[in-house]
Length: 111
Image 1 (cartoon, one colour):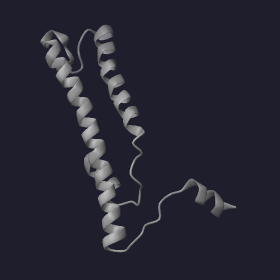
Image 2 (image 1 turned 45 degrees about the vertical axis):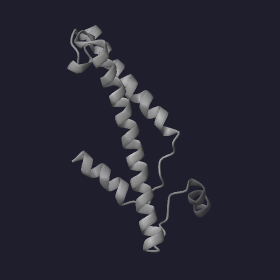
Image 3 (image 1 turned 135 degrees about the vertical axis):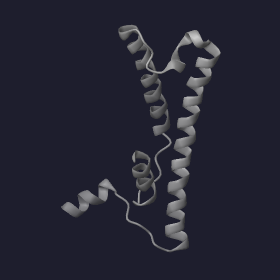
Image 4 (image 1 turned 90 degrees about the horizontal axis):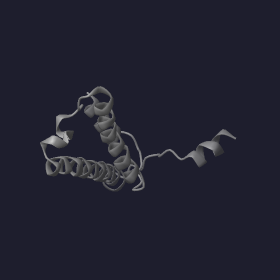
């Protein structure tokens, strides 16, 4: 259900592509989430995700961590491209420019 909602948020509203500046914050957020799993191990004595156990091999652990980072980069680019495609189809093909939220315009309208 969450995936359907997220996809509809990409396809339906007239939003702009996310700034590339968000990508480092997404990577840091996921790194902190993985670090929280180690805090859980230190305090509770178990790994929330079995693949984070370094006893399975450091190469495997490293592959999982970099795989997660690669996945967030691929998802970010896919979302960016889907929004670009939606804008191109709506604005160029169907000649239907949408109104996008602009905080400057909303302040001008309210005064």
